[in-house]
Image 1 (cartoon, rainbow, N blue to C red):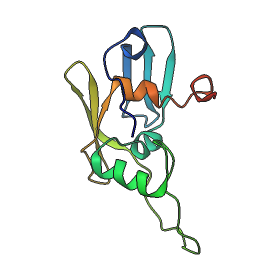
Image 2 (image 1 turned 180 degrees about the vertical axis):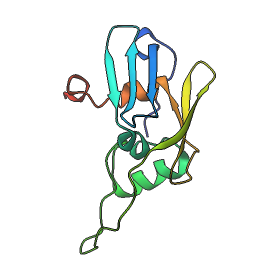
Image 3 (image 1 turned 120 degrees about the vertical axis):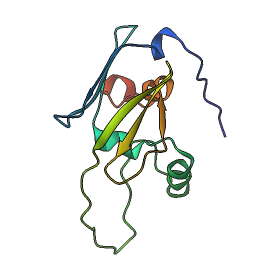
Image 4 (image 1 turned 45 degrees about the vertical axis):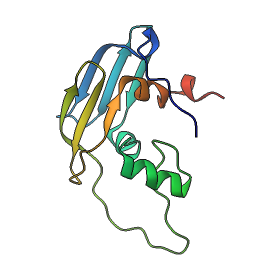
Length: 125
């Protein structure tokens, strides 16, 4: 198991943070190093860093942000798209969402969000 370095750096320190609750378009962060990240709310919910979600992803081999996989032969059930009902800052290091599925345990640190940035530049091997 690897340990993440969560110490603040210019790369994981946001310049601006916009949570687009009313439009439902997601979270936009401009980082102090000039990089810009956009996270859909569905992606963020699938990247929840709480212990329960992290353990479930570990059992199925999913990476943060990957959607849940259906069991072979299982029929997909309707599930409302993930949307936060509210968002709040956690100190100067993170943000927390209260989701429409009654989940709200995950604290998304700036370092984690930069690490799981879904943009093409960050996804390159």
